[in-house]
Length: 222
Ligand code: C5P
Image (cartoon, rainbow, N blue to C red; front, side, top):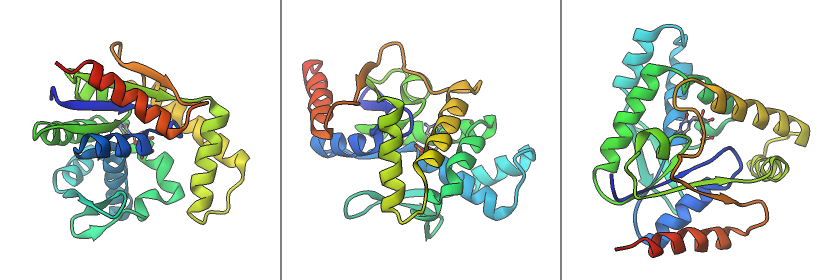
């Protein structure tokens, strides 16, 4: 766990790109924990399982095989033998994954799985509760953030590039709603760990953020 680098932050903070590039620079794997919650959400949706049916939700988590397979640029996400990298990013999965991630049984199952992966060796783990809950002993913790308008714009471009027809207004509403839900929930809410380095990426390029993070990691090396 000591060799885990945690990167948490809200939607559009740039954490996915940043985590992937930091991992590449350090030559270690990265773990997209948001994708894990999205896979659970997809499995529940497809199975028609109501979120109020705790035993069925727990059973789904227990029987789910979530795997990451290195792809050309990003990792591909597999649910059992199916590549679900695209379906988990369908627009309706954003808020639904957030709803699913509020459940205690789901968080317990994902936390266990994430710690198992973290125990295997150096890792860059990105999400909402990496530094606060899943890897409290991590040696390097970062929290990346940016102004709401910049995050909305980044998210808008991302969704447009995916071929979605969406207005900036809708993206803003969705982003604010989801972040509020992630910050206000009782279990593992999105917040910086007390010992995290906070980086405001509003006016920084991705390269500048990577340099800051790698610089901090090298400074602390013993
Ligand atoms: O990062 P991404 O947008 O893919 O995450 C989808 C949702 O999964 C988030 O809105 C959040 O509710 C949940 N999540 C979480 N804890 C994490 C990562 C993601 O609760 N470590």
